[in-house]
Length: 148
Image 1 (tube, rainbow, N blue to C red):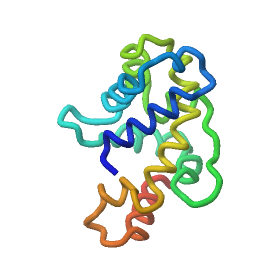
Image 2: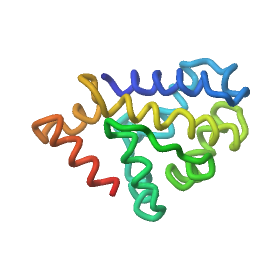
Image 3: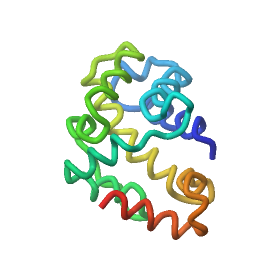
C-alpha cells in the first residue's frame, strides 16, 4: 500500500466519523491535510514528533494495540494533541477549515482504524517502510518496541 493510499483510507474514516463538520469535507482534501500533518516536505513519513509524544505521555499501550491483532484501545480527543502535537493538529484543522475540537474528535475515531489497517495484512505500509528488517514479524516487533 502506498502512503497516499493510506491517507485516503484515513480520509474515508474521518469523513465517516460522527463529527458532523468533517462529514461534509472532500476525501481528497482530508487526505492532503493528513499528508501535510504526517509527512516531511519531501513526502516521507515524519514520525519523530509522535515518538516523542509517546515517550512523554504513556500512550504507548494504546498505540501498540492498534498495531496488534487484538482489539484497538480507544484514544480520547484530548490525547490526540499529546500524541500528534498541538502544531500538527492545528495545521490539520486550519487546512480543512474546521475547529480544533472537531479535528481532535475525528482523528481520535479514525487514527486507531487507520493504523490498524496500515500495520496488518499483506498491504502493511509498515512492512514497506521497514522492508530492510526482513520479515513482516520482524518489522512489527521493531515497530512495537518503538511504542513501548
